[in-house]
Image (spheres, helix red, strand yellow):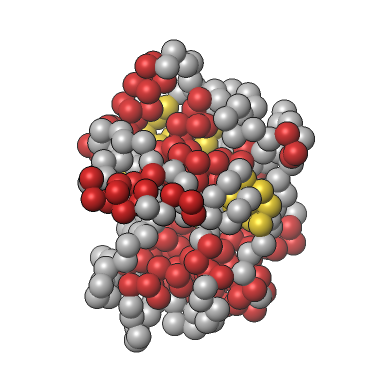
Length: 320
């Protein structure tokens, strides 16, 4: 059982033995540290990524760091998953369902540094929107009945950047007017809006699954511990990131909000969690940007995701 919200300590998590969490994009960054923190609390963690070599290295790093500090951890498994590829999403979801119980789904994988020119996936979708939004929508839908059986939750990775760009993403695939910044921010607006829409639909259907948003603040690689095969910033990158130390934090600390959104039993569906000081700090309840809270925006993007992925969430089956 989790302690009261005011007593939540990200360095000393509640006992998570017996729970299973699937984390997308676990081979580096926030996903790696979230996986490490969950496993350190005794959970079974399914680390996912699209590169088998990098995924194996990340798993080895979790186990090695625990052994180095004399810490016991839960079970750490791996699963190949490329969220930009809908075929990969379907295959991974089928494997995850066969493995059994899923208490939480951390929808973390994504592209932060978008390509300068618009690129498309093999499914014909704009790369950033496909990776950050569509793949996660399809994965969450495919695993909904498993989450419902465990009365679990899904956590969508938002961003503080959504407060800097208030434009309605009427062209989520960015068929015109593509820029790298717009691709990233629009994907995060869509992620948050769809996550909030998921909460509304789950509640209306009576499905016992919570949909929550979390964001990591400003957590660059250069402020993060170096880990071979996981986080290896250049000297110049670390120097530049350390110049911003007063307004940044490590990815290790950035993962705190994600883990709390996923594991704290006091968290409710439809909430957003992020650092107390927006860019850094301990995890606290936050307020999503206005555009992401608009039900009309959420509903329209939901339909886009349904039609593009050909995934209809099985609300009726999950309610049983």
